[in-house]
Image 1 (tube, rainbow, N blue to C red):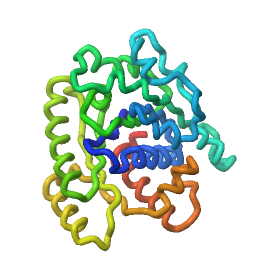
Image 2 (image 1 turned 30 degrees about the horizontal axis):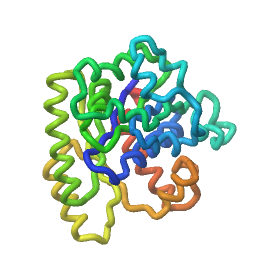
Image 3 (image 1 turned 180 degrees about the vertical axis):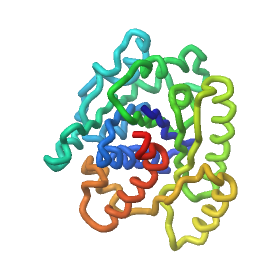
Length: 266
């Protein structure tokens, strides 16, 4: 089982879009996947077609992390109902729902013992190939809790000055954090989102990221797509959305997922 934290230092870069795109790719590949929505905005919960009020909120589970069994509190994603009949056998996409209550843990002065709450909650979890942790856009408590539990971190960035600078700071923070709190934390990856191919500024920032991040930069980059808001507004997996642009985006997520969870390891 691979546990992947999807993080960013800056809001509005499409972190939840990347989480749900990877979840869609995992569903199409037949991976048994759990999405844990750590963001107080709970956008991943909504995007995965989970009705408001369903399930036990992650903040409640974290409060009793050592006594809670996470498998008894997951909610089935409504995306499963959109699969063709011949693809439903064995498919799994579950959600641990988010809520504004998560903000109680999302503070900069979180205690070391609280950092271990999510790890304790996920210890002993079985039956999944992939766990995606959708984090708030900050380096506060919930994100660091996710890094403490994760095997890998995916940093989502835009090709802009502030996003590049924020991603570089986040890379340094992860390096320091892993040495002190999670030596088993593996690779840190960078996914570049919302790239406009006709923008000279974006072209320059992409070159800058290639120079800064080398092998940490995942390809392909995700181009600006006019259908994203519509897809998410409908709470649909990108792989089930019609049209060539959606198919291209879905294939990009297939390639990104393969680099995070190679087929031979799943």
